[in-house]
Picture 1 (tube, rainbow, N blue to C red):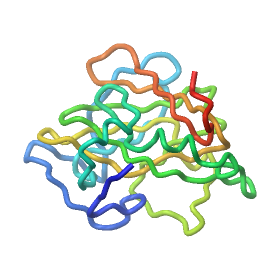
Picture 2: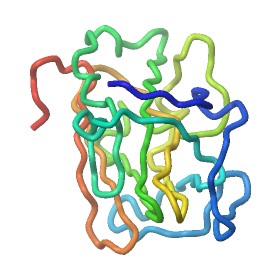
Picture 3: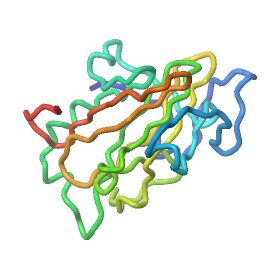
Picture 4: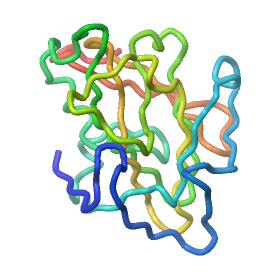
Length: 198
C-alpha cells in the first residue's frame, strides 16, 4: 500500500497541520459528540479524537482498493498485514507489537471503534496523541477497548494510531456510526497468511 503523510508521527508526537473550519473545536483531542452504543460497548470509557488532532497527507489514488472499509471509516493497507509472519505478533516478555493503522474517516462523520469483549485479551486500540516507545512493544492493557473519531466538517480526515496485537489472529471490530443503530463488523487479518477471515 502506498501513502505518504507529510506530518505523520507514530502517535502524533510532533506538530501536524490541520484543515478544520471554524465550526470544529475541541480540547486536547476530546470531542463532545456521541455515537449510539448498545450492549457490551455502552459501558466503555471511550477516548475521543476530533478534527483538531488529525493528520493530513496524500493517499494513493487507488487506496480504497487496498483498505478495510466499514461505512465512513477505512484503514488503508490493513489487508496487507495478513502476509506478516505469525512470529511478528508473538509475545516478547509479556508485551506485543504495535501495528500502525491509519484511520480515514469521511467528512463530518463520527465513528466509534469497539473491540468485542471476546477479543479484548488479545487486541487493543491505540489512537493516542502520546509518543511511541523505541521497541514498539506494549501490554494489551495499555491500549483501549474503544475509541471515537470525529472527522472535520469539510474534509475527509486521517488519524494516526493503530493496534496492539496479541498474537496472529483474525481480529473482529465493531464500528458504530453516528445516526445508525447497529454496528458494522470489520475483520482484520494479522499474520493469517492465505487463511481468509470468516
